[in-house]
Length: 258
Image (tube, rainbow, N blue to C red):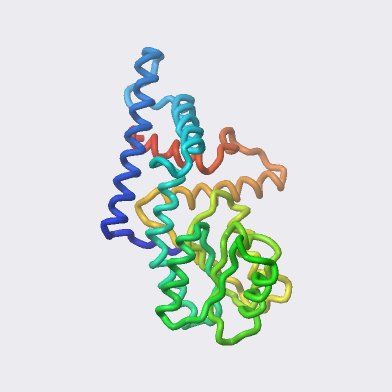
């Protein structure tokens, strides 16, 4: 994990939006608590069932609203946009020191910003996106694997998750977080293929002091729980919550001072 500071005005606006979302969730929580009356909660104690109820309601509203309002999905997208330049700059430095790099992003505008930065830095890059024909896609993959002048492959996390062999590189930059551990792992596996002779390093770019940090923690936690389930070990209650729901519950607890 490579933490980056979003210390410009855009980064500050993201942190402000996070606080506003937390405050909105906290207001809903308090209204429910006040409406139902005191049920024996100790001072400062939080009712986790109500926390989950409020977070679930917010998640469903966010899914219905899409990009039309400030919600957890638009917030994560804005974090990706804010990280784009920093992640691309790190990929440039990495490419110049270790050779070919695969750069993964989730949103098209983040990919566009990265490609513009690579071009301005004098690096030749290819792109693997969901709207490409299979011929164009394969040409990009072949160029990356065989052309020494191609230094970076910019890939969509969702479009490039399966069916790609990018083992000409041994370094992966994950500019944006996925909502699932599986999508992240599939991306890394595009480089960590049979025939790869070098150790593979994945650099995950995390926006410090934002919900990005919690999402990364939740993804890792879910991945660990999945491994435990495969091993037949007991899984604690609540572990089936989605990363989105868990992230909203975290914001609410934070706003309530927990």
